[in-house]
Length: 605
Image 1 (cartoon, rainbow, N blue to C red):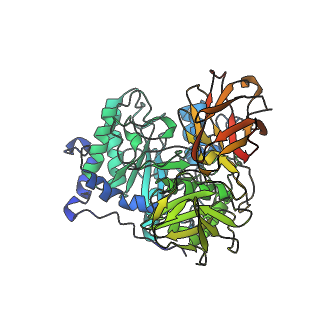
Image 2 (cartoon, rainbow, N blue to C red):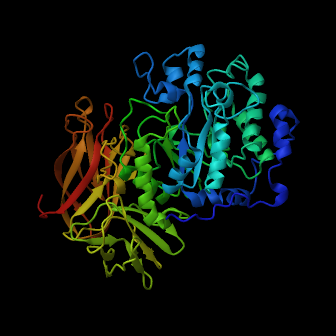
Image 3 (cartoon, rainbow, N blue to C red):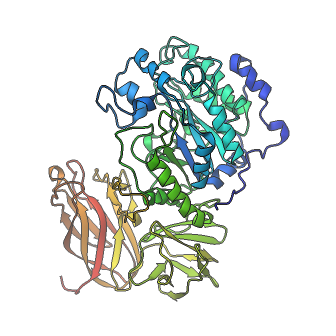
C-alpha cells in the first residue's frame, strides 16, 4: 500500500486561518472585503504554504462539464481535438449548448470510487473544473441557476460530494476556475463585454469555493484574454489570500505566464507556481515552483473519438521526469457525462499505482536531481539519498553512475531492498545490476552517501560515446520532444526514444559535454530526420579547434530517421564539448536528432 505522507495544509496560526463568516459575506458583498497586499510577502510565507504541495509531487486534474455530453463531436464533425473547447471551435450557439446540461446525468457518479482510484494511483491532490470557459458551474452557486444542482438531472451538489470524499480519504482538494466565459445566462453578458459587471460575480463565486468547499488550491485559466489585465490578477490574488491566507494560486491569474511553457516572466508577479502545459521543462528550475499538466490522451474533456492513449510507461516516466526536475505532475482525466471515469483512464491509474506502491519513496518529498543529464534515466534527491531511475537497461548489466564517492556509498534496489555491488572506475562507479528484477517502466535504486558528481558523458565499456537527445544541452528555441503515444495496451513495455526538435534558427546550438576521452579521432554517426522541403542546411560540428561540416540530406519526413556519418572529429585527452550549429539560415528547420555516436577510429583522415 502507498503510505499517506503528511500533507499538512493548516500550518498557519489559528488567527491566520480562513474566516468562514468573511467568505460567506463576500459571496454577495465582495466589495466589503478589506483586501490586504500579499504580493510582497517574505520567502518564509511562500515556503510554509507550499510545503505540502512540494512534498506531494503528483496530482490529478479532472475536466467535467456539459461539454462531456457532446463528447467532442458536433453535427458529425470533430471541431477541435480538445473536447472542452467545442462550444467555441464548433461555433455552437449558446442556447443550443445550454441544452447539454439537461443530459449531464451523472447517474453513475460515485465520489468515493473516484477518490479511491486517484488515491490508489499515488496522487496526493486533485484539481477539478468548477467553471470552464463555457460558463457552466459544477457547484451549487447561489449566484446563478446555470449550475450542476439546478440545471442537470443530477440535482445535487457534485462539488460538495467530491470535496467531502477527498477529505474522507486524505486527498487534498483543489479547484479550477476560468477567468473567461463564452456564456453567462445569469448576467446576460460575457466578461469581455462588461468586466466591471462581471468582477463582483467572479469574486462572489471564488468566495463560495473557499467558504463552502474550503478549496486548498485555486487553479486559474483563460488569463490570455485582452480585457483581463495584470492588475486584475493581482487584485484577485490578494482578495483570495485575504479570505484564506494559506491558499495556493497558480500563475494564470496574472499576465506573467510565458505561453504554454508555463513559467512566469522574471519581472512580473507570478503568484505561487508556474504551469507548463503538455510539456516538461528541459532542465530543473532551482528556486521555482511549477507543475506540468498533461493529458492521458489528447483531449482534456471527455472525447468519444480520442483513443490516442499514452501508455502507462509514458505516464510514469512523465511523473519521474517532473520530479527529477523539481516539479509536480498534474495528470488529467475526463469523465463521461454519466459520471464514470473512462476505463482506459482507470486502467492507467491502476498501473501507475502499482508502480508507485513499490517506488513512492523516490517521488514524495524529493527535490530535483543533483546529477546532470543521465543517459540511462533520471534521478531525484532526498537528503543524502539519490534515487536513480533506470529506463535503458545496460546489455551487460553494468550501470555507470557518474559520481566519485567521498567515503562509502550504499546502493540498494528500492523494490525488494537487494544490495547492489559496485566498483570505482574512472568516470564514476560501475554498478552491477544484472541480477536485479527489471521493471519495464523504471527500475529504481536508492544511493545513500556523499560524493562528487561528474558532469558529462563517460565512455561506454567499448570506448564508444553515445550522445542521446536526453543528455544534450540545448540553446535558443531547441527543445526535447517525445514521440506521439503509440496506443499500446496498459502495461506494455515501450522504449521511449526522445528526439531534439524545433531547431529552427541559425544561432541555436546543441552540445554535449563528454569526459574521460582518450585522445584520437572518432567516427561520428548521427541518427536524424529531416522533411524534404527543408533539407540542405549546412551544420558545423565543432570540438575545440577541430570541426567538420555536415549538409543535412532529406529523409521521408520529420519522423523518418536514418543514420549518416559525416566524417571524423578529434577528441582531446579528458574532457571535451561537441557542438552542433547551423552554418546558414535554415529554410524551416535544420533536423530532428535522436542520438550521436562516437566510435574510436584511425588517426588518419
